[in-house]
Image (cartoon, rainbow, N blue to C red; front, side):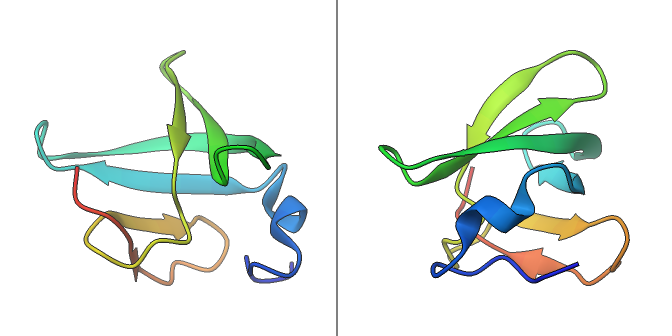
Length: 78
């Protein structure tokens, strides 16, 4: 699968992702539903039913990775 990049952010749609929520001290799994061009965020539908807009391109603290790559990435602070 292609890496998420600002030239083709829509390519992330449909990919499984895990995001670390610092306040909960827990990883949550979900699926990228779509890219929101207005807010430049990714809509993540979590397995527990929660839906959040996540900025997976920001590099300031949010820990996340695509499940198929297991490559940890850092993004914004929660």
